[in-house]
Length: 226
Image (cartoon, rainbow, N blue to C red):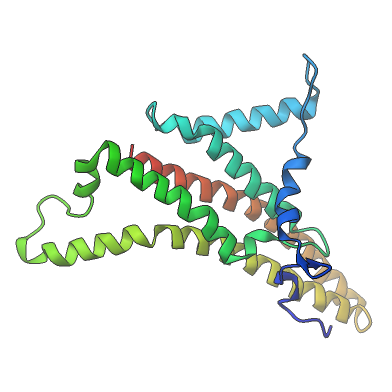
């Protein structure tokens, strides 16, 4: 009960060296692969989910945008597996670190914006000034649209960080309450434990949904610039 509430968000170290890199590289090892001509049910289900997700995200893109399909599918798999592994006891979730989420969001956003300026510079510049804008409002709208463009990667990173962190904090608080009530009132403990189970199921859904939302927004930024 005396444990720091934010202790689970501190990056772990091994012999004084940061272990975050090893944790980040661990989820890809859990993705099963097959060397046989006929796949088992797990591989078949995995391939079906990947095809379904990539089809939903790539339908609106043109040929140039679809070149990002492998990157976007890899991104959603990485974020989803990282979020799910973070729900295990005594584990560390890299996506609760704003610095890591910014490291994912900024390069992808910058790549999409630079592609837009290189291929369709007129359309890219047109986003800064909506059609029919009164002349006195032009400077203000250009500033507002520029700021809205620059905060897109920050919004991506903060959204993912806030949702995952909030869920982990709530699970930590309810788990601590369950442990404290176990020696006081058994019926209340069962009720709180049931709430904890339901919250865990909800957090599994949130982990998957946030991975999809992050990747979908990157896909939308790409669509606006291709």
